[in-house]
Length: 330
Image (cartoon, rainbow, N blue to C red; front, side, top):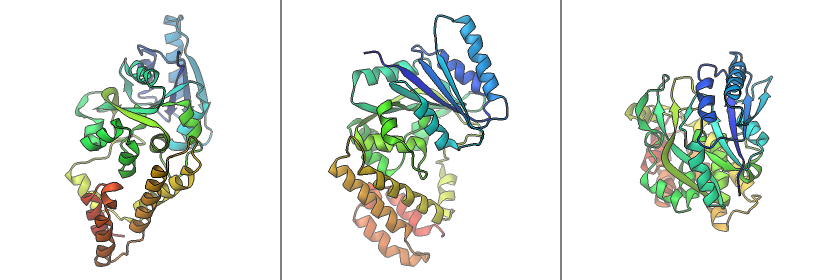
């Protein structure tokens, strides 16, 4: 069975890079059937550039038909709601998420569609990417390396236990994702507390099969203006996080866990009892972290109990999160 392919492309003042990205989509070995663009109120001519590039491509290659759907937001929705609008408007069996400033390698769609065709139960797949600078020059490392995705996390995803990895932390980047339409229908509406890619990945892992393609299929551009980019994981970045106030971050983690727990019991297909129990335990862990007292010495007892129970390793980064909870200011 031939699967129709949609691309969900979100834009916002992306004129500097949109031509290169669009041409990389149109230049795929396996072309998409549809590109849905959701523009979040651009004022720099992004859509004019996009429509001009597509018209020129069609004039040169009239044999290939790619439908373009453009949604224009008079009032900006923000990244997550804009992607929600884009994927909801896609009509394809498979939907590839797309950032405006990256470049797809020619085989990206072909490689991922082959996996979905081979595995009908697969709901979501994400991949690695090569990090490049604003000019497109390689930075010398990959997305998964920069995110510090461990061998254990990769193995868990490959073995069908992605929920274990995702409850510790997000390792999925939307710009590398492809999902089945059924997942979008399951995940809508996206909770306000979640980012679009993290939410869809979590729903997929809770209800079905996901996997990670460890090949690089995208040039993931870092230019300082990314709305969501790669966080620095070097020593200075880690030290900065220890010094950062904890209140807002912990409240956000708690809100996400609560939204997941609220929705999980209604998932169709249903999440297993073991997955629901894990989600409940994750919520309890984040509630305890969020309730830690302001005085650091008074935090020691609850943190030690959480460590002994294994929660810091099951639902976080182990000793790194222990240290964070011990020393971060309120």
